[in-house]
Amino acid sequence: MRRITINALVDIGCLITCIPSLVSGLVLFLVYPEGGGRGSGWVLFLGIAKNQWLTNA
Image (cartoon, rainbow, N blue to C red; front, side):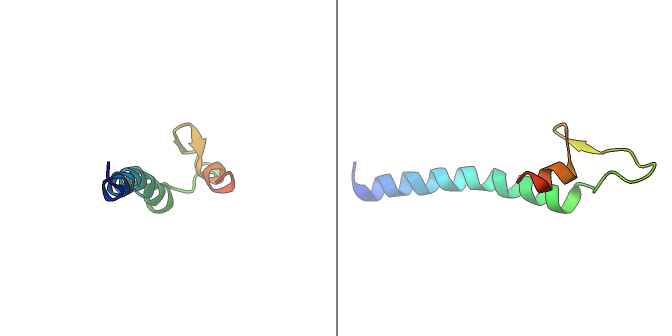
């Protein structure tokens, strides 16, 4: 394979893996509620509370 073809395939692979990561990060940052607090209960995403997502990043 030519070097240009290999570089193009690597770039496409990086783009394909970057998009889901970007979308999930935006969902966690913008949509996912804080949770916790008195009487509100814990809201979980994939079994993990938001404060754990933020502190274990």
